[in-house]
Length: 98
Image 1 (cartoon, rainbow, N blue to C red):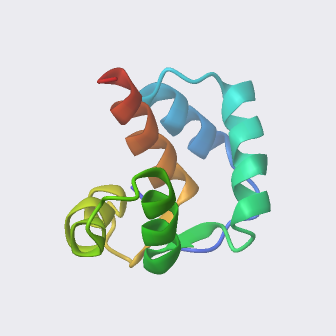
Image 2: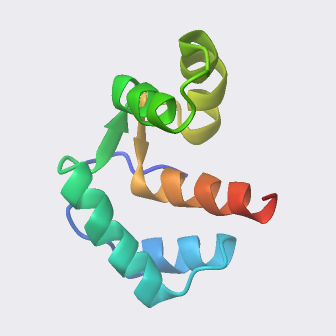
Image 3: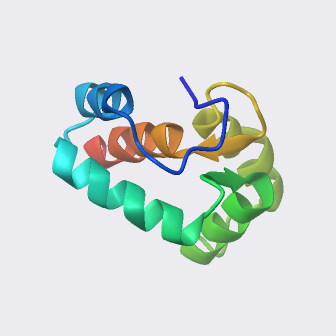
């Protein structure tokens, strides 16, 4: 479920959805959203930003794998960018397995 427009605020509906699908509480989600907007003022992570971010964390990762296999796992709605809701869901799903 991704946001279709750029959001500068997080709605109660967004908070409820993220809280329901993660282990985060509403206050933590609000704090994460504020941090997300500082790094991504337009409310979205582009494919190139995602690739750069992932390569900083995983320097040996192949760019092709990041762009063609990992990025689509985050971009649920297929709009070519990752919004906060998409980012949080995959982040928390990933942490379950660590």
